[in-house]
Image (cartoon, rainbow, N blue to C red; front, side, top):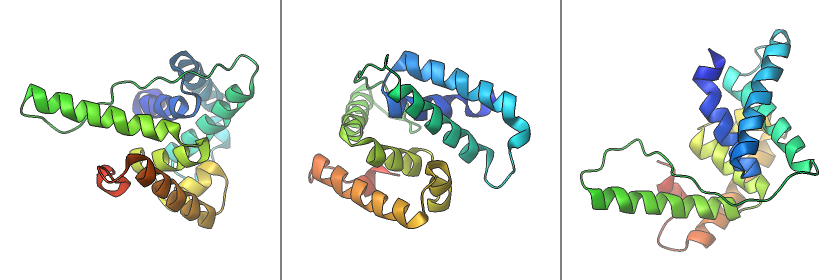
Length: 165
């Protein structure tokens, strides 16, 4: 049930850290193996989602440190939840989304993961602090800096605040 409910989110977060599809597949499998082995250690101090994302982050960083890690820049099609009325609008929306994700992937990992946890997973500052194992004040300052960096990268055409919706 956890895999069905959270599998895609775990994979997406792993991918955002390692930027490699097959590694994200392996990490996702490892996350759920770890969860299965250690489900009794879940203390319910956070949500299941927060716990899974923390495990995902730890395993992803372990993969990044491994000797076989290859840096690959892949941006996949991001599914949009809104309905577009024309093929042209769908194309432009997809291109804009891909452009934004390209800029997100240009950020340093610390900035990238803060933005993804905040914007994509809509975690609170407290939940992000729990996932990353850092103080809430650090989350706030990293989020502020990540937003500044995105605004610089995107220029005046886009801004992070309008993208988050």
